[in-house]
Amino acid sequence: MGIEVKDVLALDLLADAKLIAGKAGLDREVLRVNFTDCPLEERDPGYSLVQKGDMYILSLYIQSQNEKELYDLIKFYIQTGSACCLALDTYVKDFPDSIKRLANKYKYPIVSIRDDIPYATLIQKITNLIMTEQLDMYTEVKLHTLLHEQLSPGEQKDTWSYLVPNCPARYVCLYIKFSQAAKNIFPHLKGSIFSQFRISFLNYRNGGFLVIDLGVYKKLDHLLKVLLNTLPPEVPDYILGISNVANRAERLTEAFREAVDAAFVGEITGNRITHYERIPIYHLLLPLRE
Image (tube, rainbow, N blue to C red; front, side, top):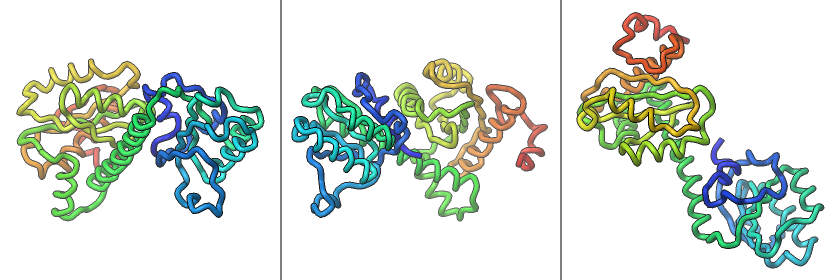
């Protein structure tokens, strides 16, 4: 699942948005941002411009004085598979009960937002959210392929170059795994880590990888202490697996696997931080973990 309505409503820009109806549909997936202030009929050429997963931003200027037109607009959004609509509160402060019943019946969120929020800024923020999620999903597919499929040397090299464009000369891989679903904290977590340490967080399953340049961060234990102390308070419990030290890009696949295996052992032993090199007794058992 990608970006959902509730993820968009978590944007700071929409902090005081008001959910009018359709609370049960906050998990609808948002695939695109669209804009329209008039209903479209199926015979209208513009009908082909809408698609499933559209999140609409609108003022309702045209429909504000006509309940039937407003009803038909929301009905049109529902029929075309829209994710939800964000309506500026300039012309419609609240919605008639008939429309609320319709939205609740089909689990279609209607959200009222301030009229001083710039359209362009809102569209940009939502689009960035969608694009970031898509890139994260692509990264996860790349990681899964690297870790679980037999790739040719050329395919592996292409994957390494995508995941870690500037592989350090000497590095370790960390895999942090959260104890519960943490999707909603990933954007803040990734931004915080990158802004402070200039290290990219690569999403993988319910966690992610960090490739630590030991030429920059010579004292790994100190970095770990600072890094873990700066995690946002909403981050759930986690375990951390640390690979052996690697000294060339060709070791990335092995380092990723070592970090995952170390985290796996940490789950068994109950240790929050586990170094792969410090668990030799488990090395023979790791291939049998399934």
